[in-house]
Length: 366
Image 1 (spheres, rainbow, N blue to C red):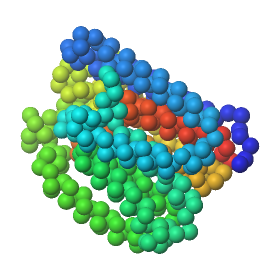
Image 2: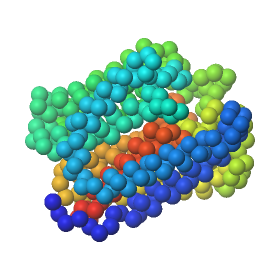
Image 3: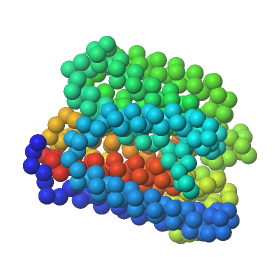
């Protein structure tokens, strides 16, 4: 392996830590009223998010200082463990159900979400497979079928919870990795048609998904039910204007926008910090993605390149979906905004993923 650089990518560290700091502030601001009402502690969610951020930062630091090719060695066992956890979460008494989805495993006062961690595990495994078997990626039998078969097995298990949002992010990420590896365009056209048919089937099979689609197209058709979140989100973003109402001055967090510290935290941020604050967050994400692309291009081996591409794709897709939902451009999916939304599993996963990028950057040729 090449000689390790003396320092990781500081611009990537700067963008990540600034997003993390903004996230901690906004989690407190968005959740204080709800936390005080429900737990008699306005810092309840902020303290837990700070704990998750601390654990994630330690994990990021450790991963950053390991040799990233160790991930290649452990990719398969890690993926198997994640599949076992996906099965365990479906078992009554082990899996915890929230808002109609059995996606969590309770661990004391906390819970973990296995579907979050399988995203990173399957990225690592695909990076290993594609780097070793890239010559077969243009074939269906040895290249496309094994990779997509694994991806859709994981997707199917996630849908049993069900969690369409997380499954969509995972599939989208893996498809980008396979495309970058050199898969044929004709194969993607066929798969795209089949995927669209499957997606339509999933939507039609569940009435609440149909309701989400129709509410996305016209949320005011059912303002008290399926269109409620989108409408309240737009009511938050609109008054924010250029500079916002001021930090802590949101009106929609007063029990109008349900649990604003999670999926819709960007709406509260836009209300309090305005167009300037929202643009700063988007700029930081763009900065993070740019550095990630540079790291992928400069990685010394195919495994590092595919691994970096997968991580950057995962973050980019998740940001686009979340911002699209919050601004009314996409149906509600339940996807968190990386580094900003409240959630231990998501935050820890994202910081670990950035740690891997920083590790690869220490070997980058750029």
